[in-house]
Amino acid sequence: MDYLNHLPATADRDSILDISQSRQRWVSQEKKGFIRYRQPMQALTAFQAKTVDCTGDTVIIGDPDEITTEERQLIKKNLTCFMPWRKGPFNVFGIDIDAEWRSEKKWQRLLPRLPDLTDKVVADVGCNNGYYMEQYGRVYQPQY
Image (cartoon, rainbow, N blue to C red; front, top):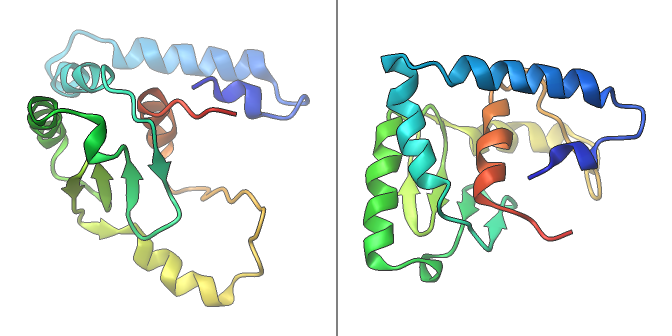
C-alpha cells in the first residue's frame, strides 16, 4: 500500500522515504535474527486479502473463503513463526491469533472517556506497532 498518497501535501515525503529505505536495509540484513522473521513474512506476502475489518474487538484480515485449505495450512505455519504474539487479537483468513496483550481491552477502557470519534482518524502515538501498517499494508490492498 502506498501510504504516502494518504499524507497531507505538507508532509516531507523525501524524508519519510529516506527513513523507510534505511529501515528496509536494516531489516534486510543476512543475520539469523532477521531471516527468522523475513522468510515467513515473504511467504505471507503472496496472499492478498480482499477484506479487512478493524471495527470490532478482533482485527479481521481476509475471509476464510478467500483461500484453499492448503493455503490456510501454509499461512498458519508461517504465522506461528511470529509467536508469541504480543498484541492482538487477529483473525487472518479464519485463523484466530490470540495475544498476550489484548488491544481491544485498552480501547474498551478508554472509549467512555473519549469524544465522538465518528469520521475521525486516530493515531495511537507510542503504540509501538507501526510495523502493522507496513506489513499488513502488503497483505491488504484497499480500493480507494
